[in-house]
Length: 146
Image (cartoon, rainbow, N blue to C red):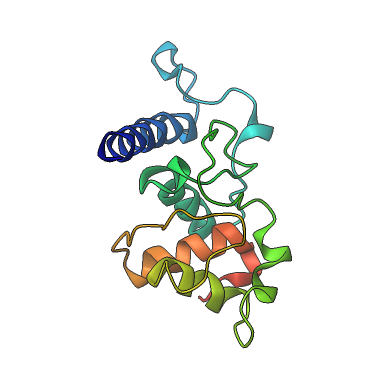
């Protein structure tokens, strides 16, 4: 079991680094080969907070367990697919709106488990600002608190 956890952690770190590199803007220089050439493949960046949330999703390890359509390099799915989370977040836990549900899921990963998934998400130790950015990325610009 420890070996599989170590392998998962290594994969998550590797996937985060690859995705972070793919999020870098194309500069037109040959050295920028890691940048995505097709702008339609880039994560939606309707606000700086959403763009920061996408980068956090890639670099803080979320991409090691979750998939999201705006990050096509994510292939591992230990946790639920977070594409279109805004459509269902408010229905998960009675009494919590979508923002509160996502915040709870990040702060208290074991508080609610999506049926069909048994893995426990680790506490990532994120700041409130980081969580706000992830919420905007996952739920859309209407979730912006600023």
